[in-house]
Amino acid sequence: MPTEKIADQTFEEIPVAEEPVEEKYFTFGKFKINFAPLVCCSAIKQKIVWSVGGGLAGLLIVLLILASLLKKPSVSPKQAQPATPTPTPFEEEITSPSIYATDSAILKIEADLKTIDQDLQSTDLKEVGLNPPVLDMEVKFEEE
Image (cartoon, rainbow, N blue to C red; front, side):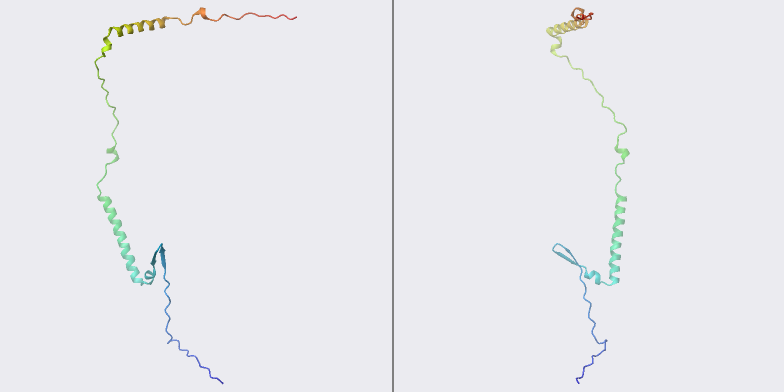
């Protein structure tokens, strides 16, 4: 009978196989970003990184608030608008009359225009003789 070799059942001596680290990549075009170092970090290192990042973000917010408070105040809306708009005063300049204003021919034409205008105003444009005749006649037809 063949002798069978009995397997050694001491499990303590078997080397533990390391679990393969699943590498996580973020691809952006040609570039690959490996997230494995962030996953493999210990909890203490992660707390330090988050604490420093949060501190920097808080410091940035405080600096922005201080900068907005220290900024010079701008002109308030009340000062920017005038109270009421005022019209510009109009000054009429009196100029010397034209050389034609004293010309005898021009003065005669102006006088003639005034007389024609008076004649037109006094003329009765509703002449009775030009009205059509009255056609209100009594018309009768005889039957045959």
